[in-house]
Image (cartoon, rainbow, N blue to C red; front, top):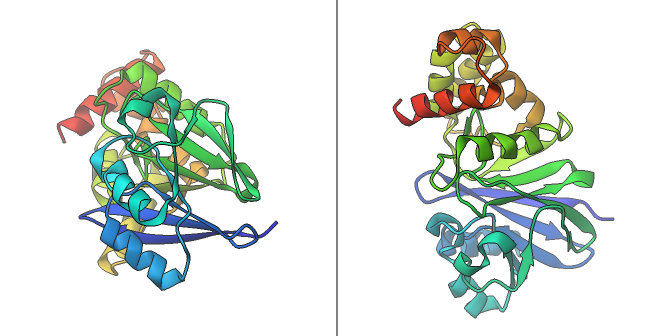
Length: 256
């Protein structure tokens, strides 16, 4: 099996986009379609030919370029079964527990409602990588536009069960702001303090903070840490349930 090649590039104001390439099968996918021009430029840079679009959810900065790219390339569009009606041009519908074969590589699909009701993520377990859209960010998680705190906490727990060294490719460069918020709810966390400094250094050098790993997120991301005694104390919810602590943390981030 050939290596799953990943080409990451920025687009729009703060999005990341990803090309995946299987050289044995001569397949190239793009994870979501925020910016057609940027995607076409990346295809030119890599000399790869687009064959697939793999969507995480319906928001315009994730599926807005679907139809233009499909019209130009004839590519196959894969997306969430639970939200198929809002994924332009969808050909293949996938959902929780499904495996999707991208050439010689297998992605396990997880339903992760919360940010939207039909959000899904793709875990290429044998490759040690996952594409999580707007469910999980580096030291953050997606806003709850269509879901409840309970739904989002359930979704995040699915991701937390992956191996700690799983590389997480999320859709936005929000890490520096997320770190500043995280320090307000868990300032005692020395892993977080060190990471925030590293993020400041990377951004000062114009470098991305993505990918992250599940292990690093479990140590530093407040949305994965509602069991932390220090975090519970800071938000005034000692003795509360995990979902209550998560909900309060999300509320505070929304107002940060």
